[in-house]
Length: 93
Image (tube, rainbow, N blue to C red):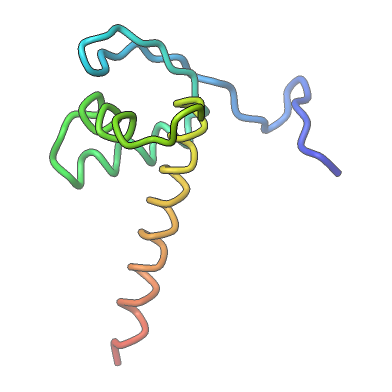
């Protein structure tokens, strides 16, 4: 069954944030879970979220919406983080 938003359900709501990316004021709407992952990734790299997103924006594929690119980056970060934790546990006795 496809994902659907229902009143009172568990569907995530979009959170809109205003950021300065490459000197331009930009508003980006993403689900909270994606924001959380992107913020954690920026913190690990010790850079501001706006700088992290600016870096992603400067390397994104032409024609793809920034929000799509950010969701894909968040998934990549979550996957890498999950694998890192799994890999560390593999070799511990």
